[in-house]
Image 1 (cartoon, helix red, strand yellow):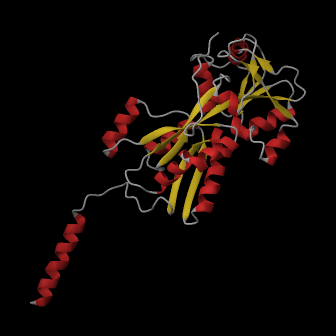
Image 2 (spheres, rainbow, N blue to C red):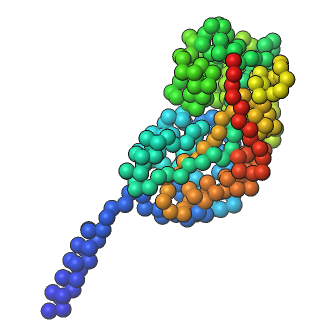
Amino acid sequence: MNRIVCGLLGLSLLWGACQQPQNEHVITDTPSSGTIHISVDESFEPVIEQQIKVYESSYPNAHIIAKYEPEVDCFKDLMSDSTRMIIVARGLNKQEDSFYLNKLGFKPLFGIMAFDGVAIIVNQNNPDSVFTLKDLKAILSGQKNIPVVMDGTNATSTVRYLQDTILHGAPFGKNVMATNGSDSVVSVIKQRNDAIGFVGISWVGNPNEPKQVANLKKIRLGLVECTACGEKDVFVKPSQASITYGQYPLTRPIYYILKENAVALGTGFKNFMTLERGQLIFRSGGLAPAKMDLVNRKSQIEE
């Protein structure tokens, strides 16, 4: 009799387990421990690598595995459940918000952590390093046949930003060539004195990074027309100050997008980057922190 009762009890427990709803988004980590995969726009690799290094040194049981790739691939990862967090140059639109609400039952969190500048870099021997916005439009569209080196063609955030902001949706000219990432852009410009390149400021603007300091002996940052300055013919380089005060026109935000409905490792890392220590890391990398008591004034590009 006892065997029959035990057997029935076991079947009951097994049946109950089978009836439990399957949740593909079960969180098994905490804000300071566990393992999380994140996808990061390649433009932001140097500063995000520093964020991860400091976070993992503070929390030895936390492991953040980052994949650096074009922005469009980061969004594909988020949609396919291969990552719970992406770091990109835009937030979610209404259609994406609705998609995740229908799929997950909740909307991912997203917000701005810092502001980045798209830097123009030229070889030290290139005589031309000063650009108006009209110059940039003519160069990117191919009207001026100056070789342009980009970090890829597969919808990187830099490609998207320049096409939307400078060309207003028009295609790039045949003079625009693609390389395999921002580091390759820097390498090409170091070898060519006839081309210009575009990279995120964290690749060339950190005075505490020996490799970047060494690179600046062979390349230099271009100056861009300041459309928000009161005076005419003012040209500025990308820097924390010029980004913060809206003087550098090629400025874009850095967003986190977090697909996590519990307080877990993704939340802990997001909080770290948006609070004082993480904001200071953005600051030391030459970017403008968005959450500290600093001002970022919006400016409009005019032609």
